[in-house]
Length: 216
Image 1 (cartoon, rainbow, N blue to C red):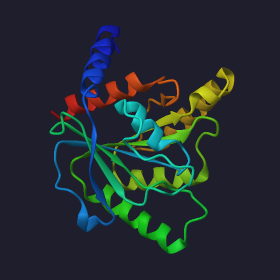
Image 2 (cartoon, rainbow, N blue to C red; image 1 turned 90 degrees about the vertical axis):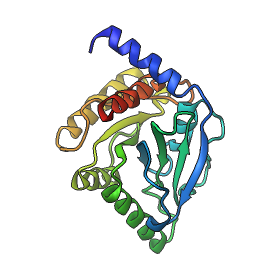
Image 3 (spheres, rainbow, N blue to C red; image 1 turned 60 degrees about the horizontal axis):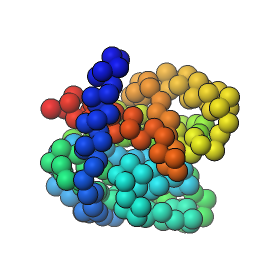
């Protein structure tokens, strides 16, 4: 992509996330979803992948999304609106891959996620968060297959990149990119981020601006 276009998208992304973001809705079931509005992007990932930390870093808020050392704390679909709520809404999905939650609870969360993916016309993209230290695991593959079946466009975001040495990170990026080539609904470009350092956040915001342009 042209460097000038890149810079323009990054600046638009900075402005889009510069204002105040706030929690607006929590849905424990498909019947309690908020009315569809604007463009929605959702964040999925294993329960310890740093999803809440990424949402906080993305919006410049320390405690917008609740972070926890206890995997599986987010048991609902959590919706966040910014100052341009008519344009963009963020959705924090329940984490997956936790071993400690009861099976009935896991089944309930899984059903909620599947129903949301299949019936939400305003959902433009799912960002699937993968730990940069480990790459795509079997439990992630299950989610990618679900997204393929639901025909929901998704993009992989590697998290915690600051905790990986450069050669290993480059290897994991290459392996992740190659794995995504087998998934029809996957966006080919892998985004690399660190919530701690802020690396990759401008590019992630720019990706969302590009989505808004496409849906306009």
